[in-house]
Length: 235
Length: 253
Image (cartoon, rainbow over all chains, first blue to last red; front, top):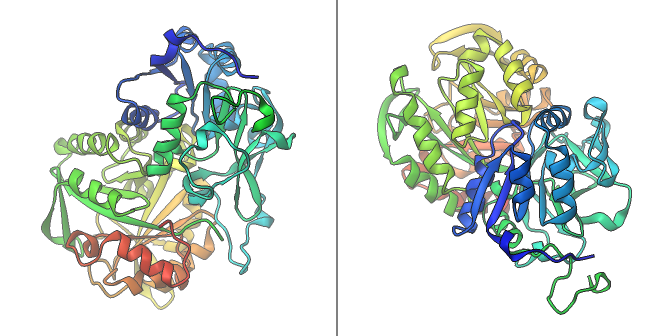
């Protein structure tokens, strides 16, 4: 269900800062793809609510991220943004949208049904019997599972940079916007309405990542891939 | 397996310039770090590593400006090491635009630093650099202070220890091979890589592209690091990646 967005918002991007690490990469990459857009790194809930679009990053451990987000009184602002404006979750910022994480047995925001699981030690072997390392670190292929404006100009199977030990397992397959193999297929992007969230780091993924961020800056928050296609049935 | 092996050009930086030496001595000027970083990014480098080898602590802030400038122009992961002594050094480097911070001597002197930095910023951004030298067949020990001081620690045991403390990646340099262009110490690389679950970057000794292939295939490295073969124009990063791909190694091309 696409929603209308007020044009007045279109110049501001809030990168939500809840004290968990380096957000400079995210803001620099956004400034690079959209030099005319004002990018604000902020921990102020009012700034988040005022912004036209929101980036929700995350680093470190999910329990710490949830705690620090709440300590800054950002939960309501994040939930409101996730329901009203173009919203991009990155890495732990994707994981936090789900109901629960195995990491520290912590509850997430519950916007999406499903869980966050650790790569199971016993499964981490490739088809030649070689051990696969955790964190899953490096450039892996992202296979697009739905048409979406954020994939515009990005080849199916393009490589993005990952670094994570936990992955999201949505309870409903219709959320899956992309999957990646390590060694089994896991969900590397999800999308619903105005929310798009990725496990990889577009801000560190060279041309493919910058293309995705450029698409996000232009995105109106609907899931249709053309302007004439306004209903979700033509996805 | 679709996860690509990584090629990581390494820039040794002192006083704002990239330098290259043999066994940590006889440094030669190799150029401007920002210019070199941009060139490697254009050639398809998967990550970049900067090692601040500045001797005096009062010149340390120069690296922060270098990283800030690179991070505003190059959108691939950046690792920075050299002179990291405390959690606050990690914070300053991350804030300047580093994605990962590498620690070496300080991790040996104070292993709690690895644990504290990892707990604060996550293991994905904590790299422990291990400089190892063979002391007898099949046995390598950890050296610090740029290779001058033997700690007596067994390299494989130390790798396992730093993994348990919270290192998310290990940058493994053979002191015997560094600067020699005779190839990685493959036995060392394989022994460490097989002993830990976190990714291992092989370093020290690359002289040609076959050495990179061997680092992955025989050394079981997850990533390979090289400096002089790229700095002095012997090979481009792209040539190296294409060569590895031709040898059936998964690469991002």
